[in-house]
Structure formats: structure tokens, C-alpha cells
Image (cartoon, rainbow, N blue to C red; front, side):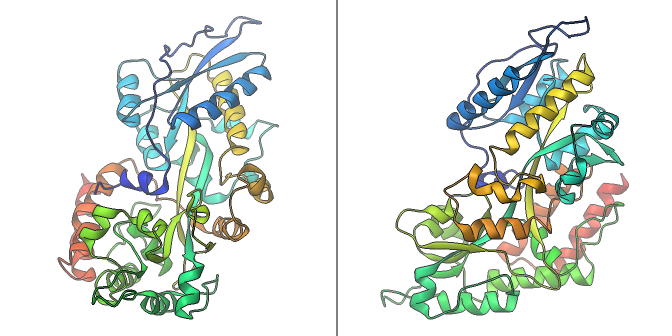
Length: 421
């Protein structure tokens, strides 16, 4: 399995992408400097075919309401971030574009992104206070704002109601801690056909959710906001111990090779997993033939869950920063009425209007999770950090190659060496 990029696949966020076109960074309509001139704004995004059609409809709607710009949608096939970096290096950066949370600090530190702080703070049509704090933090670097979050997808817990009923186990709710979760998972793990082999498991995990989630619930972290490595703190190690128990001691998950062959979410969809922690926008609560409900993930010393967050950002090389900001703002707000979960707290009661196929329990779990869901602590070396975490910690935990304390201490030292370079 891949490291950081595999999380996108787990959430169902990035599927087969299609190139619709490619326009120069100046935009088809010119730079819009002259009075009355309409600026062309190139907007780069990812998305599957159906998403692209829906996104184009949103772009058309935004364009119909704009009098000083027209947005040209560009979707990029296959490797979105490599393509974006190639365009930037070639002096052909899109005016505005999608950027997931783990890239914002890197790009901002490299002066690739437009600092929109002054535009946003003076914008009477924008209420930054309505954004949930954690998503907005992922668009911030060194105290400055470099984008507006367009989507925020906290990890929630889906559970198979029928498997719980068959096992006589009470349904999970927002009071559950890790001990209750593990006890229930043990009751749900069984040999259903009496052939001597386990064929139903209480839960599953294999690098997903990100290891951070387990650490956060015990009050630990990987790196603090001021850049201090705390992965080897007692709190962080305690979170890793819980994950390690689930991986190896409790006998409540499938074997690693089974997960790799059949897939995490796919095994839940097949009715073989009792509880699965998946993205808020996943379709796990509407699998045909399954009776599925949802709640928040269990807590430890505190409530915490991973949040996949992406922002709309602007290129520092855009020819008309003010108009690019306006297009960025308008496009972001349009997407808030299309994608769940909107990072704008004012839309919390409209999730079922945006996606009516979600169950009420899933919506309740989303809204509660949004109060404490969080993204990674932004750092310019986030990609290197992710690589070290996967290679030296998460994959080693999965393989059983060391205790949580040993692996945490070794990985922490590697991270300190990286950040001191």
C-alpha cells in the first residue's frame, strides 16, 4: 500500500481523472486590468467523470453571476500533484486550484501561493468566523491565510446493524471509548460457518485511519504547531499501544494479506466487518443489502478524529490577485453547497439537502465530529514527514516489527533530524 496518498483512495475522494483542457496561467479572457475587461481565471481541479460534470455546472453558475471574470475549468488526469508542480515549474500555474491540506505549508513556504489574508479580512461578503477552526488552520501558514477550505471530511464509524443484532451487542454511540470498542469487536469476530476459520471480524485497519488519529485520542501528537516532535511522548505512545493491541493482540481484524487483497472498505461492504472507520462522504451507509448506521469514532482521553481537508488556493503569479481572490471565494462557496461536509458551520443543518442519500445517523456523526475533527499540523516538509511515519512507524507496527515505544522513539529521532536540516 502507498503511504499518504493511499488515504485519498480510502476516502473515495480521487478516482479516475479526466483532462478537459489546459489553458495558460493568464486565462483566456486576459488579465482584467483594464476597466470593464473580463478576466479569464484558470481553475485546476481533480474529480471523476460524474464529479467533473457536476463541477462544470457549478462553474457555469458562478460565471453567470460574475461580471469581471470567467472561470475556465481544467481537470488533470492521473497524478494531480505532479501535474500541478509541472505547471508551476513551467510558469504556467493555474490562477486558482485545489490543494489538499498536506501541501499547503509546502507551497506557501515556497512562495507558490497567493497570500489572501488582506483580501479575506477586508471582504464584507466573507465571514471567516463561520468556518470551523480546524479546516481553516490547514489553509494557514506562518499566521497568514493562503486559501479557503472547500471540503472537510471527518472520519466517522460505520457499523453493520445486523451483525450487532446477531451477536447481541449494543450499538455503538458517542459515549464509547476504546475499551468498549475493542470488547464489542471481540464479540463480533467469529467463525460463522463452523469451518474452523474466522470469516467475520469486529473491525479492520491497515494504515487507515492515519496513525495520528489513535495518537490524538490519547492527547498526543506527532509534531506540535511550533515544530516540536512529540511522537515519543507518553501520551503518543499510549495511543500507539491501543492501535497495536487492535492490530496484533485482540484478534479482531483480518490478516494483513487478506486486507491487502480484498480491501478495507470492500470487506465492510461485503458484510464481513462489524465496524469500519471511514470518511464522512463514503457511501458505506447506503450499501445495497446492508443495514448500516453510523456514529463518531471512539474516544480515549479526549475526542479526536482525522479530517481530510482540501482548500482552494491561488497562484502567487496570477496576473490579477484581487479578481483571482474573488473567483476563489465565489467558487469555494458554490462548492460548499455541493460537497459534504461543508467547512462552513452555517451549513451544518443542510447536509441532507446537499446529499440526501446519507442516513440521519451519519449526518449526526458528521456534525458532532466536525466540532473536534482535525487535520495534520502543517509543515513545509510534510511529504518527508509522511514518508518517515509510514516507513518507520505505521508499516512497522502493521508488520509487528517492534513495540510501539521502540518504533515511536526511533521515528521521533528521524523526524528531529529531518526538521533540523
